[in-house]
Amino acid sequence: MKKTISVNAIILLCFLTVSNTFGGTETKDSCVTTSVVIKSDSMISSWKTEYQISYSEKLVYSKPRLLDFGLKVPHDMWEFCKYSVKGKSWPYLAIIAFTSGVLIDNDQNITNGTQRFCDDIHLARSSSYNDVFAPKIKGHKVSIISVPQNINTVFYTLGQGYPALLLGGGLLYYGARHHDMRSVSTASQLTEAFISMGIATQVVKRITGRETPIRSTQEGGKWEPFPSFNDYQKNTPIYDAFPSGHLATVICAVTILAENYPEKKWIRPVGYALAGLVAFSMVNNGVHWAGDYPLAIGIGYGFGKVISERCKKVIHTH
Image 1 (cartoon, rainbow, N blue to C red):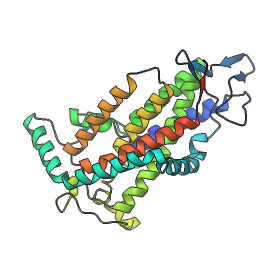
Image 2: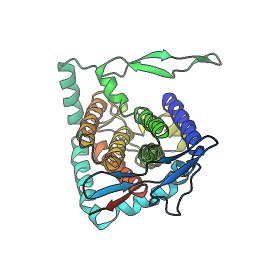
Image 3: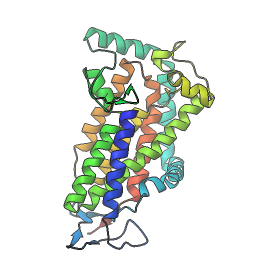
Image 4: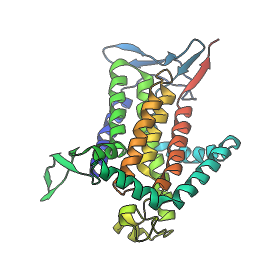
């Protein structure tokens, strides 16, 4: 958590700095402007905002407004709710409900089988890190940068948010350096999505109150809906299994990247493969049940779609 907060703060600062360097005008609809001009004391340069992704389609972006990634969160939550109950979403909701029910009913057997398999191939079950930068603050060691010490921990770390946020920081830097509005917008979308999605998953976790496998007191984990705020804070692993925020984070990042870079056909297969490894590692180390995953996938995909569709415009050129 401390590592995640630190990286969030760095990326937030970078985004604010870059946003303040934009001196161009924008239209009322933040998704339809086709050109942005940046004025400074020394130069006037054009920012690329249109991207021909195929013979018949192009994407159009405008600059994200200052603090959009935070101020748009309530709007994102509302749009996600509307997106979830659209007519075309009902078959997917049914699939999520059905697969969740089947997996939850078999969660203990799935967990036991996965962990036995990992023991057989000598894949470590524990999460282990080695501190690289851990200064003492007020006499207490604070881990800022650490390195995973086994393969399972590497997979688990991919779902902890800050790798994707570091990717967002890289996109922000690239966009600012090369006047690439799509890159800057994608970085803003990633930050915005993780805030919105983090709130949504926390709300569901605090409603359902499911035990994690490593702390379970009965087969499949006990459910204690609506635990008190203090109980949840003091004994989080007892209540926060359902749904998986780690998997939702990975799916959301893959969705946003794929929606903004549709010409990069490798994003989805590679991203989903990594998501599968994250999911597998979390069953192995006892952080999540398989039944925690279908809803997490739906939340991650839904927020990714809602936010990316708002921030870009698709124009059919032929």
